[in-house]
Length: 244
Image (tube, rainbow, N blue to C red; front, side):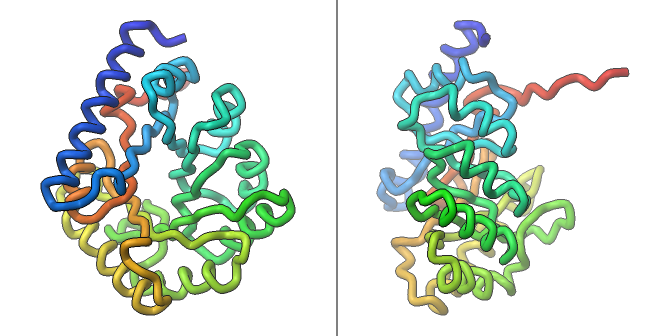
């Protein structure tokens, strides 16, 4: 169980992030209400997530299937869960079964995972699921996501051939040291323009998921509608120590 001091610090940090996000949106003439702050609770205990919930926040993200299906049943049903990690196609049904209040999957990076999600939604009889196509804007082989040149093709597949999914936009992960952040974000914005033109989608109805703890303000200024903030709210990740 998280210590009260840690929980209080997290709630204070959340309020600071939300204020910074609003200011970043206002500085470029954007509506702050169009920016969703996802509190990404990877490796953090349910008690700490509950503290953030009690502070009034409802949008949370998780990176791993096992972690989100463990946590979600222990928390209120009105939480809006977002899955922001890489999703293997064989985990699609497990994810949807374990998290009935899943609002969006941010990491669709191929037709196979899209088809598995579509089939799982249909079989479970749940409402259509919002999904974002993940784009590898940095060119790093260690990152998931499709090449920018393939975005329109995958977006078209989701929109036209996955009736139980709602194609809602694009997602990317920036460089670890943030050196190429503007370029990454600019690439995703260009991809948005290409997809909107090809599919006849209005840009003001299009979601962009980009920006994390170190660059979320810049992401908002460049059009992000979802920023995924973890360590700035919750503190450093707490990975189990490996046995020696």
